[in-house]
Length: 206
Image 1: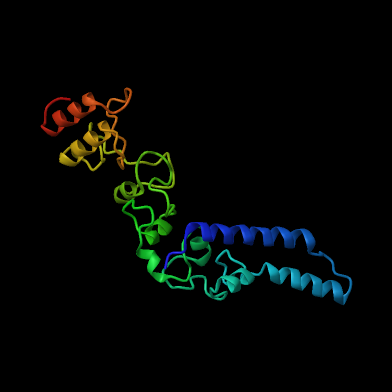
Image 2: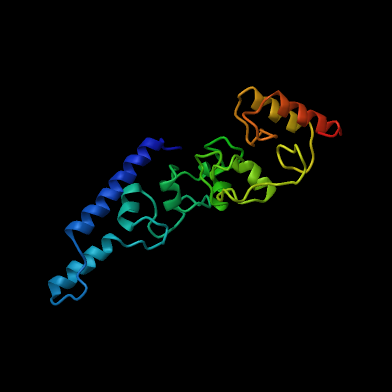
């Protein structure tokens, strides 16, 4: 079951508010001088305890219904904390195989590659995550993007073919594309870019 993003947003706000409230009203005493002080310190420290190291305190895990002793409560390969902060459900193992942003990369692979499960292009470099994952570049770093070295190779797979032609046509029509389509880097994608790609696909000098 996928929990609506707004619901997790409210949870995150509540968690942050709890942390702020605790840190303000209960500062940790560095050198307790009495049994009361020692208990105060222990209670305060317990409020921030994260036994499984998943980024969520044990108290928060108890409130969410996740396992405070298991960093991945639903066993889907994604830590509970990462799921919470990325709008997923740490109690639903099936969401690992969902593609929340419809970019061609599952939520689990987004986690494994350090990407955002709700952004088609995590680093905003013009290349969707699925393209970067398939080409071996870092989808979380804008300075790392596919470069085949072949002119007019829109999808950077090493050759110019019908796929590239379709992408550049879509770009000229103002449609969303998973790769940049402005071949000559002049203005927007237009008929000239389409012509350049078609000529290149036909083996003609473009």
